[in-house]
Image (cartoon, rainbow, N blue to C red; front, side, top):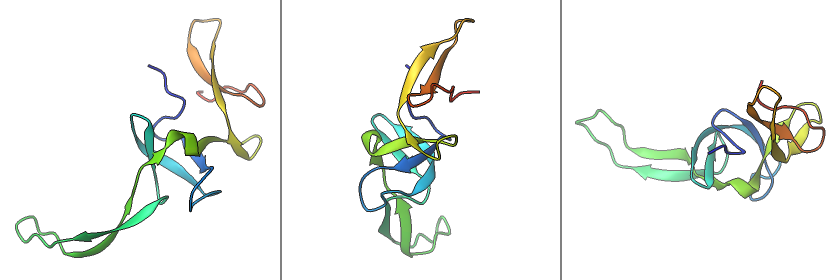
Length: 105
């Protein structure tokens, strides 16, 4: 299945406390994405001497719904919607809706 947003994509957040921020997708889980340094939550961690883990409060990226992020279009310098197109050689590629440019190079 081809998904519109994939790991490693540059995205812009459309809604929520981090609206307007830009980041890279770390991983995709079903209909949610985890974006680097976006939607941070404080997590209290117990120390674990067996693993050598130190206790304390850490910042952790939480998942965002894919509808709240848009793929970053460098040509337009803003977030853009994504569609699919089959090329002449039979490859299915993602394209930006605004200008029709191919995302996957």
